[in-house]
Image (cartoon, rainbow, N blue to C red):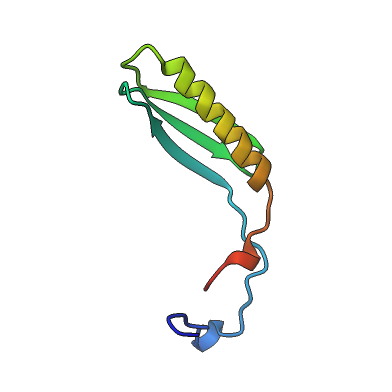
Length: 88
């Protein structure tokens, strides 16, 4: 396994069996300069969109589009155990 260590010392026997995304924060903006923050709670299955900077007239379009993206991310990663994908 070039480039990867399997570990050494007292933790060389450890196998990670659970790895979940709890919460994540994303920033998004559009070509008018509007900026928002999207907080996704993967464990709780919810998201919140907060305005960071309102400049153009299309803020609601940006929030709607990012709401759709957040809902899609939740559908794919809500309470999904990612331990089999760890490369440590």
